[in-house]
Image (tube, rainbow, N blue to C red):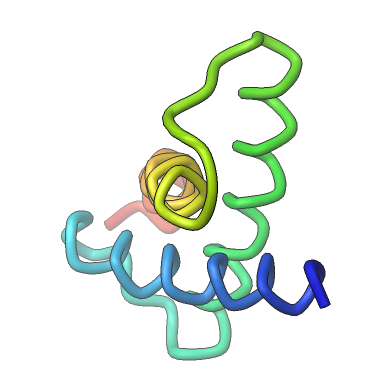
Length: 81
């Protein structure tokens, strides 16, 4: 159940990240995957560094969205937009 919640958070993060990054539109499915990947990477990196942006659902959304924005920003350089 927690895994499904984490996927949902990643999807929301991908949607929000696209709104912040110009030229970050890769398509609906790709943006969802970017959000999920950003959430996974961000959650892992923040946990390793000992950073916590809050607890519960809101903290997870903030962490996942921030990391999805960074991940999408890096991908836009690869896309050369």
